[in-house]
Structure formats: C-alpha cells, structure tokens
Length: 615
Image (tube, rainbow, N blue to C red):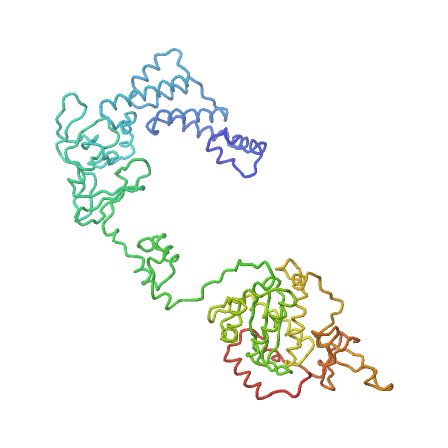
C-alpha cells in the first residue's frame, strides 16, 4: 500500500509496525476530513502549473497527472479534454507549433498520447539545437528560456543566466544581448560580442572578473566560460574539488572567490557569494585555543560550528599539540576493564601487603595476601615484618605445588621492595615465575587484589563492631573474614563459591557460628576434679586452620582453647559488657590512609605495645 501512494500522502500516513487496515483508515480520514478545502487547494495548483517551473516536459506532465488523480480522489475529477487543454496551455512559446497541432485534432487525443508526442517534440528540438551549437547539448534546453528573467525582477546588467566553467570549450558563449555591437558570422546563429562582460565584482583591491570576445547564442540556457582564456585574461587560477571550486589571485595565491557545486557541473551563479579575502584569513585554531584559556577541542569546535569564532577546522589529533596543557591540566588517564582471563588455577597469583596502624594482640603489623586469579580463592597471613613476605611466599608456593600439583606462572604485585628485591627475584627466576608489576604509584593496575583487600577490611570492621571486640583482635577477624569469603557465592563466578571452583566441592555451612559470641568449651576430665566446673564462658574467635574444632578465648586466663565440644550462645557477646568501642575505634581499618599517617600511627603503637596477648 505504501508503494502505491504519492510521496506527500506517504509522509502523512507512514508509521512503524503498521497494518494495511490501519493504513487505509488513516488515508480515508485524511481525505474525508478536509475534502472540500483540499479540492480548492489542488484546483489552484492544477490551474497554475506551467512548464517553465520544471526541468523537462516529462516532469511537467507527471505533475499534472498527479494533481488530476488527487482531484479525482476528493470527488472533483478532471476530464481527459480538460487535462490535455491544461497541458498545452502551460507550455512556453517554443512549443507554439505543437500547441497548434494538438488543437487541430477533433476530438482531442488522450492525455497519454499527447504527453508522448510532447516529449518527442522536446527531444527533436534539443537535437536540432545541438547540431547548431556543437557538443554542449546538455546545456541547450530551449523550452523555458524566460524562466530566470521572471524569477529575478531586477536582473544584473552583466549576467542574466548561470555561467558554467568549461575546460573543453574554445571560446566564451552567452545569451546577453544589451547595447552590444555584434558581427554576424555567415552560416551561424551566433555573433561576436565586441565588449567585455562582467561576471563578478570583487572587493578592493581586486578588479572585477570579466570575459572578453564572447559569442552570443540566443538559445543557450547556461553561459559558457572558457577556463584557459578566463584565467589568462583575469590573472587568476582555478582549483576544482568535489564540492566546488576556488579562484585565487595568480601572483599571491590568495583566495578571492569560492563557488559551491551540488551537481555534475561547476557553475558561477548570481547567488554565489563573493567572499572578501579577509574572511579567508581566519585565525588558526591554536591561536583561539590560547586566547580562550586552553579549552578542549570539542568546546572550541562548538564555537566554530555556531559561527561565534572564525578559525580553521579543529584538529583532534596530535598535529596541533599544546605543550602547556599537560603541564597545567594533566590528570590520570582512565583505566579500561581488563579482558584477560586465565584457564587454570595459579596461572596468575595476585599479591599485596596491608599495613595496620594498630598492633595485633600477637604483635602483627601487616598481613600479606595471595589471590588466585582463576578461582579468586584467597589466603591471608598476618606478619610482624615485611621481610617475612619472602618466606611466606615460599611456604605458599610449596603448599600449592604439593596440594594442587601446579606451578605458579605469574605473580602480579605492586612495585614495592618486598617483591622487587634480589632474593625474591632470584627465586622467581630459578622457578620460572614471571613478574607482572604495576607502575610506581599506580595501584589501580593491581586493582583485583586492591578490591579484595577492601572487601576483607569491610568484613573485618563489621565483625569487630558486631562483637564489640578490641581493635587489637583484628588478626582473628581477618582469619574469619578470609574463611567466610572463600565460602560465599560470587556474582562474578555465576554465584559459585571460590572454594567450589578450586576444590570442586560445595562448602559446608552447618558448623558456622557467630564470631565473638559466648561459647562454652568442654574441659578435659584429666585437667579437673569431679567438683570443678566442666566449662567456662569464653569468646568464639574462629576456626583453627589445623584442627576440626573452634577457637575459644578464655578472658579470665587470657589464653586460646582449641576444642571440638563447644556450646554456643550466639545472641550474647562477652566483650559488649567489658569493652565499649568508641566511634573512632576502628578507623585504622579505613582504606586510603597516606603513608605519612600510617607511619605516624605505627610510631604511636610502638610506644603503647599491649600487655601479653592470648597465644
């Protein structure tokens, strides 16, 4: 249905996901709602349509037929006789013979026959003129010569029609015939014009562009300008491009005129703007960049497009690099998400160190972290000195090789001295382990382990707050956080746990208890007599790594008890009665402390080393 309606109707009824029924209803309402007003409008268009408004007789007849069909659709049909009479009445004076021929028919021929004969007449006239004037038959259209004169009520005295630059012509040709003396050449339809013809007036100091020795061709629609003769006489050069051409002063090379072209020819028309050479002397974009305080290229380009400033096209590449911008405005470049992935466990082992400004109850200041890139399984080890990183890595590597029969291929870490030292590097070289180091002061390059540290610290802080434990117990909360993180499902692993990926088995959750709650371990019968209590209230601090049991801290004896037979009260917390943490008690766990602040807190901690701790 869309293919059978005219373009103007199609634009009115076209919608997305349409049906034939709905389309037909819209077309019907379009004509029924305004039938009479539309009929008046179409009748006016039909009456005032003339050939001189169209490029060819074919386009003219097509328009008449469309209007007649549209009038019929609004119950105002046009008869064949009226349609043929309208067709011949709208022709120009060049078709007087054809009009007489049609009028002598009785009855008048059908519109289709009259249209076919009109197009044949047009073709015959074009061929005749082409024989008279040579190879420029595409420029010789004798059917509506008065058109441009009617549209321009005050035509300039020098140019009345479009002028075309022609490189194949041998002379200038024009239709201008005003107060010129001409000499008729025998056997031709042209005459030699004895005076020059001005085609464009340029601003001072440039003289106007003129033509000399122009041939007069009355039936020529477009003036022809012989390029070689034109450039020689006016001392200009012409540069053609796909969008038009530019005229330049031959001696200075300064552009003096620009003409755009949208067709296959290169015209100079009366509507083309003659541009002053000053407007070509636009400032460079770099000057405007400096004037406006060094804005980014898109901002400068928006000013240019909105014609608020005049400058050359803004280069977005480094062809116009401003050396002052990085010195004054340089910021960190954005990081892109890494698409690298590993196929086996321990192909990449991430590592980092976290520094605690609070000494743990076992005199730990740091913990080192190892993270498997494939399974995201996590190991954390509290240490007292950074020099212990090397020995901790050796033990971890031996554990991985024994338990999983895998060798570490890469270790990814920051550029700190705990990793980049002779002893550590020598071990990696001997074992074929490659380093993947982040750039200095660029921790986001080690972002995977940095994000894992944040997750660990968030859980540690929450566990300590919930149980009201002192901050010096952070190493127990760290062990608990690591244990729980490896058991929890991960969105990045399609809600599988890290333990499931690495060990290929689901973790058990039934043995889990609330960290820091009351617990009652059973004392061995050999350590007490029959009248002594069988247990004592303790604090649950997690799960020992080498035992299938629980870690219970006896506050009164200040020691850790490992026991399997433990009863729990998960709703009460002993330290909530003994210790009330302040709002700043766990600030040491905040991520992002500067190295200077960390060193200061460490010095303060060294002066206040806690009393003997639970072992």
